[in-house]
Length: 268
Ligand SMILES: NC(=O)c1ccc[n+]([C@@H]2O[C@H](COP(=O)([O-])OP(=O)(O)OC[C@H]3O[C@@H](n4cnc5c(N)ncnc54)[C@H](OP(=O)(O)O)[C@@H]3O)[C@@H](O)[C@H]2O)c1
Image 1 (cartoon, rainbow, N blue to C red):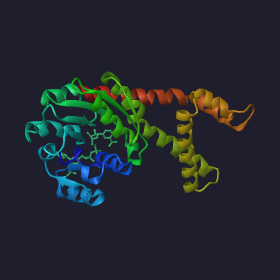
Image 2 (image 1 turned 120 degrees about the vertical axis):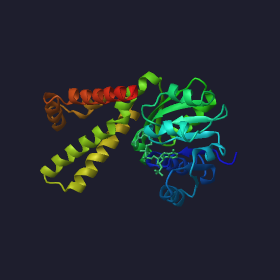
Image 3 (image 1 turned 180 degrees about the vertical axis):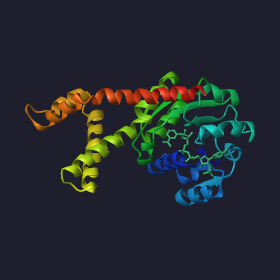
Image 4 (image 1 turned 90 degrees about the horizontal axis):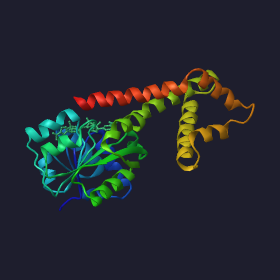
């Protein structure tokens, strides 16, 4: 095989993944190919990464067995029905398309090994959080390939397909909620006299550090809250206000709303 991995679609998510794979030395630029519909995208991506670009998925399916499907869900039917992309039992198709079930792909390409991934957009800075699901024909070594690819871009957790809607709420949508928190804290900083730039940097770094503490300290989030709240101190005053204003239930409702929408979209 001339290439080790091919991307069907070369938009924001594919670019983030290609960048991660090259930066983390998972594949060299010569081992990666991609395709996109417009010449503009093909030129941009080949100039940025030095990879070979093609117009059609069928061309790259001949060059590699490992394909990442990174086009919008609405374009998937025409890929198989009009473009007539044919894949065989040698192919591993890794879909990152939100809401498109493994069964849908298995109906288009019944012999092909499928792994479905729900990444989040923080993979653009190699700090993503992704859930991935094994299709019926995918092997242990296919799962290992996907784990290696996703781990180059952050955290990767294997889940069951019925959990992917929850993953969508917890890590797919939640970066937006985190940005809202950073924005609100920065607003408060400005209110209290800091420049906006300084306030955003301090708030964002605090979010990053708190995330690392939650992942690496071995403590639960509530133990971490306790550890920051000294008796009669500053932090417990703020925690009390958040409790009184229903912070936790607002966040729970936000995640549940995202999960509900994901379930609705999956039924379409
Ligand atoms: N963005 C996110 O935060 C996020 C998070 C999780 C999952 N996802 C999923 O990731 C997928 C990609 O999203 P994105 O934001 O990267 O989309 P995007 O920026 O719109 O990129 C889509 C790419 O697909 C190409 N394309 C469309 N039809 C094609 C075809 N038939 N053959 C080959 N290439 C084709 C487009 O080519 P042109 O550029 O030439 O038009 C474009 O490069 C989606 O399915 C989405 O659900 C996205």
